[in-house]
Image (cartoon, rainbow, N blue to C red):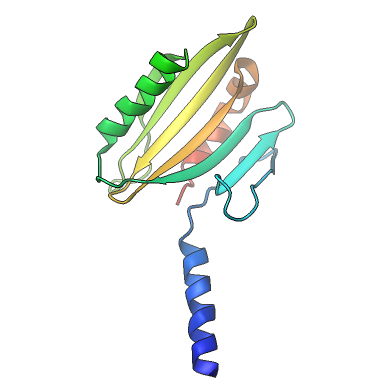
Length: 151
């Protein structure tokens, strides 16, 4: 009986250790979803910049080029964003990653939305940040640093 309990606890700890994670930037507070929510990590700055990490299954093992194009098409063609930049993001030599920067004007205010795609054969990790352009620009180095901590 004790062996079964130990095995169960070990399995739970192992699973918890494998969950995607990201360190929030300095000056952000956690707004994590309840367990089982859409986000693994979610935080907000005092100026309203939101940073989050979520994951999706990569059922057909599509590559980074596929997901870059799919996300860009969705945001530009369907949601009215403009692609500002698409650049490799140094996540590690063995994990392809790309940082996409989008902008949109809503009611006279410009917003920036960053999407950092990290593609693994079975999972896509999506680190996101967004808010009013001036607020996002002010914390951009911190956000990029946080994106680099995604595991």
